[in-house]
Image 1 (cartoon, rainbow, N blue to C red):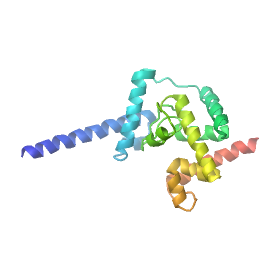
Image 2: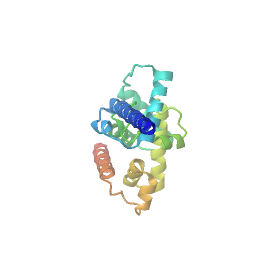
Image 3: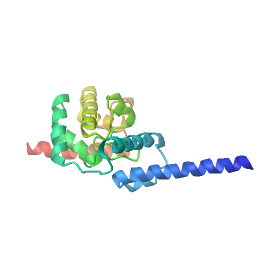
Image 4: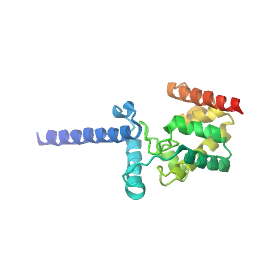
Length: 197
């Protein structure tokens, strides 16, 4: 009987933890899907840890909105550094995070460029909610995918779903609805910008 009581307490603590995690994720994006998501607990835990660490050690409680002009200026700098079209990068930032540097997705992707914790670490980043660090890591990762696939649609697919997913499907856009919508949305907006030049 005592063992059942312990299990109930553990289950209750877990449910409260998931609720708190979902609430934190929801508050960064105001996406209702984040509130109802029982999945991706590990990556969202890591993402929320990085957010809390950033708030405590760097920015303080005030979530100051950064002007788009400043983000675009930094994005252009890192785009030049890694040889990526800055117009494409700006569209990716808008689609991924809507220029919200504190965004955490329902899967745990973080910051302006919405990188997963492991990808962010692979790119050498320390603080995913620092604007410069996040932009540089995301643009560096996008440039790697552009060089690897030598095709913008496939690079965007790899950015969204992972390079292995694209490679394992014969170098085609994966048949995931989210990835297909993501690629179409960015490519449509990118074609509009290219048409203006």
